[in-house]
Image: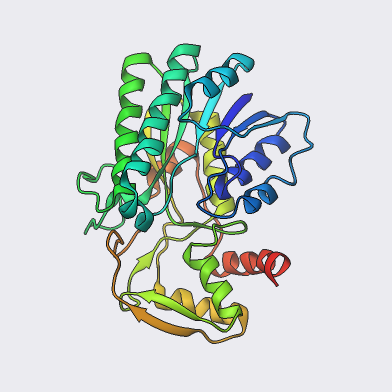
Length: 316
């Protein structure tokens, strides 16, 4: 297939691009190398694929229509995998307009290109943040999600809604995949697992927000990519699908496991819960199992060990 991946130089996107290329697909990436974190990290993310003959990188922005027109005129895509976004709950509180433009307007721009160029398949990378402080666990796709608690979550929910609109009006098959706290090699340096490994290794204190009882459904990158690949193969209608590990771990337990992997004790500094942070995430993945034959297999212990192997090669 000819596949467009937006945000393909990032953490999740670069892993997907590698798998697609090794599966002999033709892959085009659009990435604007946003300076949210060091662009050299993104350059390195794509270092293993830059010489593939079936790979093309455009350093462009999904908000610039003329750039999109140029790309869509040069290529005939079978499917778009839309991962590009402004990510992160806390930064979205500081820059809600920027998050709206990229996450909502950018998604509309791509769906408009689907309409214009007759592209009938679209995968949208959504987020578990949409569930907010949902009291019922595990979270299912049918749960009410009308009460997001951060601009980031609100923009992703808005994008899901517009995806459904384009499916209804133009018969575009769309999967909105709600990712649950993805981690693994190449994880963004600002995210908890990467940050904790870095600070503990440097004998610096790690910030823990709340009392340590918050919990997350940490999902290893390989399991997420397996779900995305199956979604690409099977998308035929509009569906919202959770992709998680369906296992939760508290912040306290996460730190304990990282200490064990590193063989070092963490210096902990407890801070108040941050605005926009949720108390827990926990995915019901029965829909993904049914529709995608999704079967995550990586335990948190295995995933942290694999992350550390990558971390040692790249940071120590």
